[in-house]
Length: 58
Image (cartoon, rainbow, N blue to C red; front, side):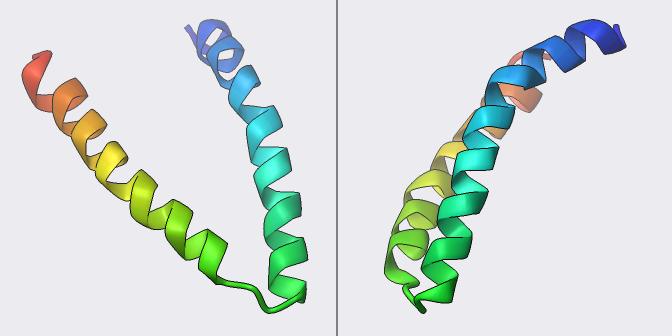
């Protein structure tokens, strides 16, 4: 079970590495608007996905 979980996490690791490095560059340059824009777009998506996966698929 842990092996299959880890295998499913592997594709996300690359995106996380890219996001962290871009975040550090933007923070060093004191640029916050792109991060806020992405967060504002992603939060509703996360809420909807969590609702569907937790409540609708029971």
